[in-house]
Every structure is written in structure tokens, then in C-alpha cells.
Length: 280
Ligand code: AMP
Image (tube, rainbow, N blue to C red; front, side):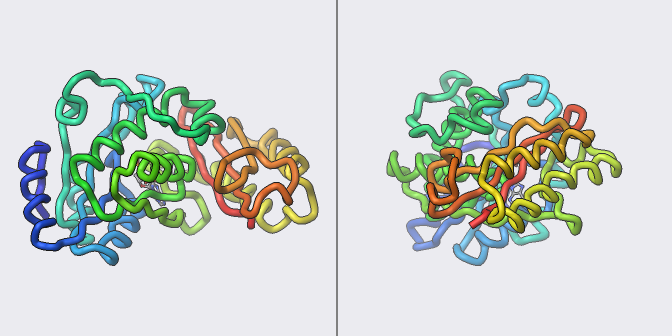
């Protein structure tokens, strides 16, 4: 696996590889890798001649500086994990190389995809995500870019900017990887105790319950039942929403959307967890 810290030599190499007709798959990460990230790399490997993974803790997408400082970092372990799945190239850029002028977000029209859920609870988050991904797409110019449905709202925001700004790559969503009990894998899970991980199962249990029972209720009733479930849990529910899967507009009636998805965010202590799944 080739390792780059500077953008310029990477661009030179990628230009040459593209000239040789190689297709390039890209996976953006913030490190603290787990098997969820590796599933994205494997999917990218299966669809491209070579795969490049970025490890960059992007300062503009953290609305709380405390969260940025606490974000887990373990570069050596991350690189060993990438080698284990035959990743071809890793880029670990400096902040100055990604933000040469000023460390701030661009203004990009996200057509309202950024307004509810993560957008409400993490103001500015999606402006930061859109800015950094646009920059990586410009540097790497991949054929395909892979994002986890674990961050479904993020996946839709990135798909939108890639298409509306004609950035080039096809944006592909990859299924959520979970542990044996259903907890969605996340770098933040490292900060949970075993008891915490057990308590956090209420998130996917609620989602699973909604998947199995939604036809008996309307969306508002499902949300109320789940909110009640969380009242007797150690987790503090931030939001539970049922939305049109394409527009992320909250649903009043099931007939209002062709496909619906349920989304949950909750905090356990200071660890913030999110999850979602399709209902139909
Ligand atoms: P992060 O390092 O948290 O920014 O995540 C990098 C990429 O991995 C994003 O596209 C995430 O959606 C994806 N990802 C993180 N956790 C999972 C998971 N459990 N299953 C699938 N994809 C994931």
C-alpha cells in the first residue's frame, strides 16, 4: 500500500494511473477504522482497479470542539487494517493541504437535505462534510466514491453535490455493518463500556420493531411508541424521525412516500450514536 501525506505527489500518481486506463474507487474516512469501513474498501476493490482511502479528521464538520479533540486517532492500527484488505493507496493529508486558504466551509446549496435530523443537532455539520468531500473529489477525481448508509443523510448530501456540481464520481451507498447484536459499528463505540454497548441496543431494537410493526400504526404513533421506550432507558433520545427516503422530509402518512426510512440519534453519557434503516 502506498502512503501519501502530501496532495501534490498523489495527484501526479493518480493522473498517470488514470492515463493508463485504471479505474479508481475512493473511500473517505476519519480513521479509527473498524470492519464497517473495511466493508466499504472491499466493495470499492470489487468494482475498481484500485482503491484509495483518505484518513482525515475534518475540523469543519465538528460543531463542538470537544468532540473534535476527543475523536479517536490510531494511525498505525488504521494502516494495518487497510493493508489487511489490500487497499492500494492511503492519503493522510495535513489540514493546510486540504484547506490552503482558510479552515472554513464553502456555501453549497444542499436543497434542504441538511435541514432536519443531523442538520438540526449539528449546525454547520453538512456544510463541512460537503466542503471536504468536494475537495477530495477534486484532488482524487475517482470514478466511484463509497459512503456508508450508516450516515444516510450524509450519503444523500454527497450524492446531491456530486450530481449538482458535476464533480464526476458516481456516489455509491453501502449497507450498514452491525455487530452480532445489531449495534451499528461506529468509531464512537470505542468509548462505550460493555454495559454501554448493551444499553445502546435499544436503538436498533426500536428500528427493528418499527420495521416489523409499521403497517399497524401511522408514522406519528410509531414515533410516540419509540419515544416512550427510550424514557426507561439510560440513553437520551435526540430524535427519532420517519422520512421520505429520497427527500428526507418527515412523513405524516405512509402514502406520502414511495420509500420510507426511520432515523434515530441518541446519547449515552457523552457518546452520540446514530442509526437508520429502510421501512419500505
Ligand atoms: P467516518 O470515518 O465515521 O467518517 O466514516 C467513514 C465512512 O464509513 C462513511 O461513509 C460512513 O458512513 C462509513 N461507515 C461508518 N460506519 C459504518 C458502518 N457501521 N457500516 C457501513 N458504513 C459505515
